[in-house]
Image (cartoon, rainbow, N blue to C red; front, side, top):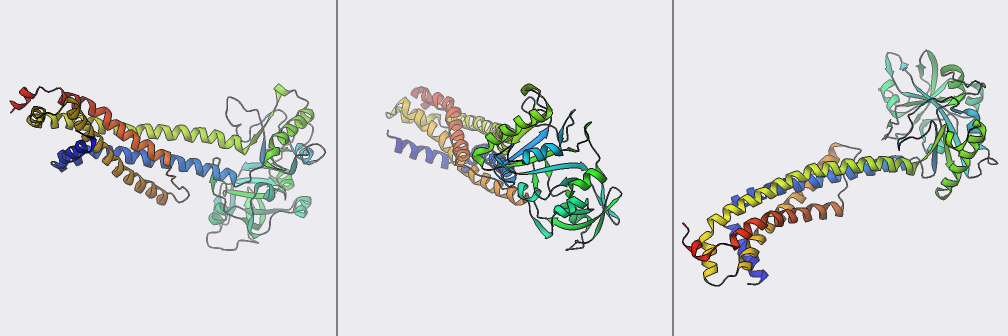
Length: 414
């Protein structure tokens, strides 16, 4: 008997009991649907995180206090004996010291209560310089940003992130000129930043920006023993993505000289966007595999269901098997017939599950506005291939049992 005839006989056997066949493949449908949905969501999360970090530019270096340990990012705001200072930022900005850096933006931040009238918020209040918008690729949509005049005069002016603007001034489309209080110090609003969205560090729009000199003198008085003002982070834009390693090496050498430390005693860490994306990519990758593994359990359950139903089918069709053997069917013909039935059940269930998974991924994308589930070819091939393998594996025992039936005993079976 050829393969085409075996497939035709297998399909005829399945169609003779449609309800049982449908219930048999239900486990495969649910399993494949779950695998496709969860893998798509996991890859969507990974893509979202990558896009968030790439949105600030592809040549940005983060210089933070503290030393990277055990593959983890330094804790934000981590304090060391020396830390990073405003003088360090000025030294890095000097092209004679670091020729591969084109722009530098120091930032000093704390989480502080900000209020306007009877409304308040708890954003990150950051003291920055005018170079911040260019280095971080973050623009103002209303009003203006901090300039050198504000910096020199230690002006009490503030630029709001979208989240803070909407919380403090929900009924105003143009809050420019309004007064807010950072702690107990009044500030005049001069601008509103464009919406940036969330990132691996939280809601970027939950922020208020003030001149760095104002933050140092009026809000967060924090100096080293030598009298230099500390900063929380220094952003450095390299001349190009290809020169980022060279820029990082130059910054490290400069800071070691300024801090009078050796290579092994670094009290700072230089992180590139590629480093951050790699760390979060590993986390989301493990999470995706974990979720996919959980969903794959339902495929195994579906495979056990196929085996049980196929064993029932062998019992019910014992006389048919005996008759086919009596008229010349060989053991491999019987084996092939039942294996094909098992694989057909799992493949049809896999295709239906694929459709269910696509619908599930689209539903997640609509429910989570900022997240778009990504359906990859690899995920589809993995789910369909695994479902076929499940059908083949769990169909072997029933098929072997059917092929080994003695034709005389089978014909006498009632």
